[in-house]
Picture 1: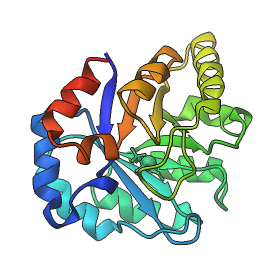
Picture 2 (picture 1 turned 180 degrees about the vertical axis):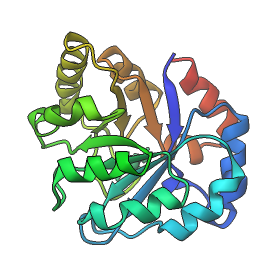
Picture 3 (picture 1 turned 30 degrees about the vertical axis):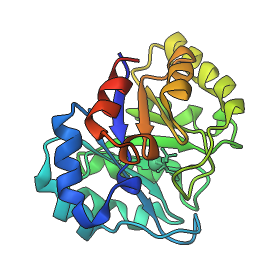
Picture 4 (picture 1 turned 45 degrees about the horizontal axis):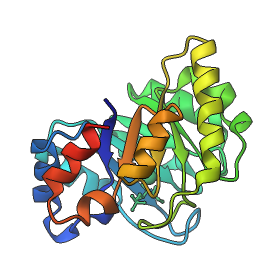
Length: 215
Ligand code: DX5
Ligand code: ZN
């Protein structure tokens, strides 16, 4: 059974706490929070103050996906705001090793994300330190894009490396995930699905989550 982590990027921001309670009741396994700084990607979203303000709405783990140019400058604030897992990109301007060490030193879990055009080799050295490998199946920046199927090969490659090396890193898929693309991602080795539009854009959010959980 796949884990499902709804991305609140596509939620109704005016009712954010309610929306989070709803996905919690429906059986979500985590909350995916897309942080964008207007530089690394051309969009601007949540800061640590918002994350802190929704923290008490649920006990579900918060996965904070940092699509920002200088992640090391923001780690501390997002850790303080109640994030449990902090996900960073090798494509950003920072030293991956020291950022991952900083995350660990704050008692948080670390994740690494990889853009569709970035080879897996950019993150392989960091898998051992990472709880999660977030495989991007869209170009980061916006919700509602189409799943890029070419990335499936990279997902299989990641599954093999993780299994062969006895690592515990879980593979999560982010971008354009629907029931169909979610299913093929799980077949390619994914453990967790991140979905925004397919959950918050659906008429029955609870039903959408239980459908995903049955994959
Ligand atoms: C893209 C974000 C994704 C996105 C997923 O930059 O990292 O988490 O919100 O949204 P959908 O499911 O709509 O592609
Ligand atoms: Zn994301």
